[in-house]
Length: 456
Image (cartoon, rainbow, N blue to C red):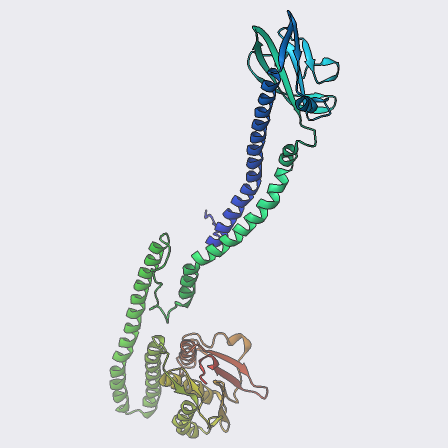
């Protein structure tokens, strides 16, 4: 049983984690700030209440054996008009009885549970008003008292409470855009940090059977990825060595076959039976053609085009036509070049391009009927069309034509099936492509497009 694992890009994973972190931060940060400020507000209220209670206690005086009077200065008294004002107070004796206060009907600000031997903070609701209050014990001239002081949280002057109440929304509106901006900056940072990996991916995409010499540089790569890149380069070293051994074996085998074939042909020429000798001579010719194409393919398989190499396609086409003209005339066919009256320069290897054009023209000559002409149409942008008047190419066979050793008719021994694959490899080495189609009037049309390698 196999388990399929789905891998996401590193950038996508980092961004997803960053977005999750920002979402959590955008929710938690305003809440934390709200709680901190709420704590600070409560602390400010407590300090203010302690100060008020102590201030009130300073103005409590004995006026008789068991009589006490609170004489507040006018400015302080004005702050305790009634509960609708900002502040309120009440003074209670040792039995919890209200001696005086700012509330109507001399009411305490809190219940008896607030009368403790130490300062007690509490919240109460009186007459529809929310009060933050303190009940603070005092001993004056040997007698116990409690001074209760309160701040009306509903009063408009207590602006800090309104500020804290709307803080969560305010901070959220400030925090969210800031975090979104942070995310955008992080994306730019991620993109820059991952640029070496993108460059490595671009280089890896260029590696193939024809470019196993490429290596991904370890310099500049993240430390976590460097061992992977080094291992990948070592695997490429082994792969290149394997390709080299394979190519050398093919080339050596083809070279070694040439001498036995020459000896075999010499022996065939001595046979007394002319019919048998002609048949064997034809078979040896096919074998020699296969050996030659194997050598060609080995050479072009290792072909690399230097940046300063230049070739004139017009001259290449003219040389191919001159080379194949005697064979064409011998078989009752003709070969013509159109558009080669001026140079068409491309970045490329002239010898390799000669092989490609020759293979295309030779293939066309073998399939065009006697009495017809194979045309090489050259265009200034670096595109060459090889046209014949043969049976054309079926749509289903067009993708198979450029495979190694593929032949339409396996019984046909005159072809080894390597000529068009050599053309495709040469086109690839030059950054071009080879295409095939049919002419409207009949016949095949092979297009060697080297416009990407054309020079101005």
